[in-house]
Length: 261
Image (cartoon, rainbow, N blue to C red; front, side, top):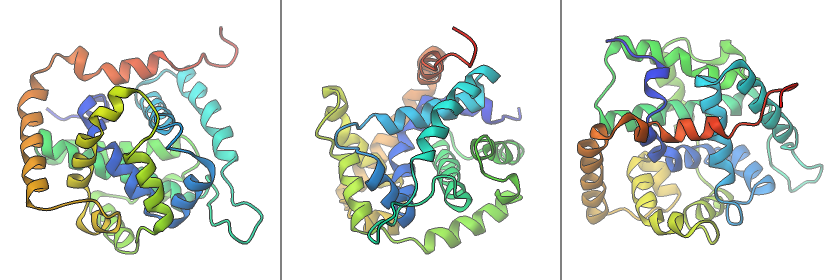
């Protein structure tokens, strides 16, 4: 059976790749500096994941009203993310298409990576359906549809070229530390962070993992592989209401659409 983004995107296990996606995003110097200037992971560690997932689930599964509601939240937030008028600011304009393309690309590649670890590779027909659908995560805001590579082969060339040109700097590493070693947030979240750090390091490509100075040796690799094997065995057996709980929760938390109460 051919599956599309709507069949795959609700799986909670995809959130295991959230740390990977964010680190790959902030490895881009403009994005890393922008987050350092405009966000604070250490004090509000859940804000960015909440905003990102609300947006993604609304675009993929939401009603037109829910999409409008999340756009009302995202657009003003993006409008504030512009370089400061001083010589030290290296932040980016959040409406910049090139950096938006990279953000969406990290979400797509992370989905593919996690799906392969848990379920195995998508069949070719499903992969061809899912790939262009991911462009909606960018085009729902400001990304021109023509910028999304035309096919998966074109995406791989873009991905390899862009990834090879990135090198996480100290600003990006500081943001990553705030993300992976939170000093605030729910106690449960902080208790699971050692596992989050392990999964994030294991899913990262080799060079970004080294750039971010993530601990990695044979013991880490063994623990990562055992954790992934456990997820792959147990997760597909869970009832759908558990596997889709994050999607249902985030959609239920969206504000009403304009003109509705």
